[in-house]
Image (cartoon, rainbow, N blue to C red):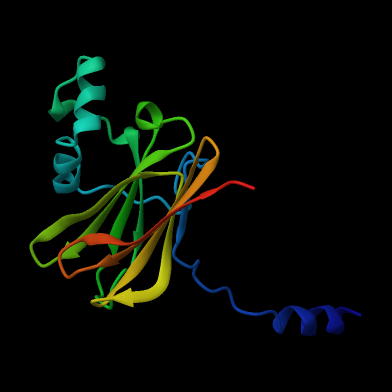
Length: 168
């Protein structure tokens, strides 16, 4: 009996590293595998209009921007060895049924913000444009649902497909 248990255990598949998170939702409070946000990225986030408004409401200076207001996940949007970042607002930056998402692309000089979107769901697709993966955004408002597909143009993500349809 011991031999059978040992044989079954030894044939168990080896654990593989967790896959990158590709779906982000306003329903989630955090990313699945959070990573620290670099200081240079926090400086860019501190200049965002909505973030500035929340800072002003809370009587905080941009230098006092709490890292806890964001959650970040690494993802490889292109074939580069270095990972890019998808950042989601948390805490006071969250809205009802939508959330703000930022995508920062890793470059030799640091990070560039290539997308800012207010949506319910952000999905990273397998299909690519100019080397980087396409993005699908989805949300619902009143009696309609909205789907938008974005493609990378070499510098940033831009709208490729935009569709509103009645919710059934």
